[in-house]
Image 1 (cartoon, one colour):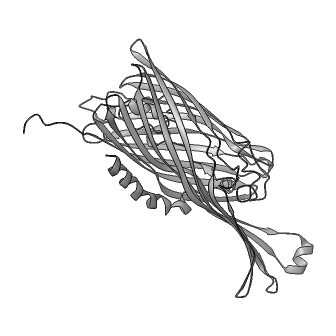
Image 2: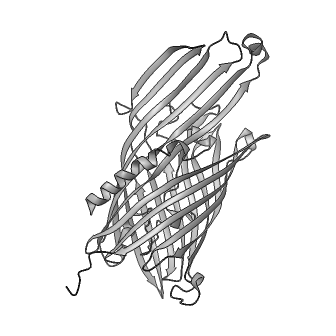
Image 3: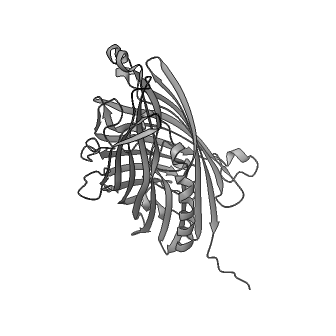
Length: 431
């Protein structure tokens, strides 16, 4: 089982990596390690990303390793997701739009023995994708060199490969631990070109190859409340010191000649203090089995001491002043099933979901916070037998504002998840 899972996930790594350049498009991704992906799948994302206190034997929960114990004893589950990201950007009187389509996650969960189970997953952690240009309007400079134009572009992603194991310590208490490996490449480039053929164009940028290890622990405690069940959950993700290389380059071109001005490779693992931040999350849920569920989550992460705002390649990009700060999120989601066993009306057996959320980014731009908020909707369509289903999630939200010359993003995201469920290790009664 473990060998098959490892072989399957390793075959998916190139599929994730080759789409890295198109995995996201946002001018906010120019800073730090880019935009942090909302962890989870179509199931959790359709409920605003909750799951710290979520326990459901029909779906894989990627937010709390302790939830892997919420399962049928012999069940094996797979989850694969796709996402479409559609964004509209506005800054002053400028407006633009962009669309991307990507593989969002692949995960599998299976029992080990008794009350212990395991989960393996591969998904993006952060992504960089931008391309913008601007011109210098200084009359004195234009008189000497002609028009000067700057074009900045960036692409790449950091992925996370994780393996989690969870067990029930007591009847109502489940705990889990998760090992996480981050890896990926990020390229950031800026070109200064002039209208005069007698002046050289300058090209400078950074190429980053990053890897790191982190861990995550989680727990969930269930408490009956009449016919309902209340679950309290908590998670802690450790910080990860980034290793790898940052290549800082600068060269000039004129006609067909290229002159290398500087080329330096820094090894992050040698005395580097650049790291991701640790994160703590808490959640509480209340559910009526096979009928409805409501959950609220809060997460907090302090990025102020991660050194990203003072390290070349992570910090000095774009025109705005970039500084790291603490990030936090508040999410609330619900699920409702009219009648899971209805034999007459198919849509009464479907699961319907919704949620609202607020997020504060891990950085400030020119001392301004960058906030996001939105609403989510979704449903799961049962397919064939067992718990197989097709999950669809919608996310309509906004990030930033048009104040202080910031960029306002309106986005519409569609996520599709394929939930595959089967029973393994069943011994035949007759031969």
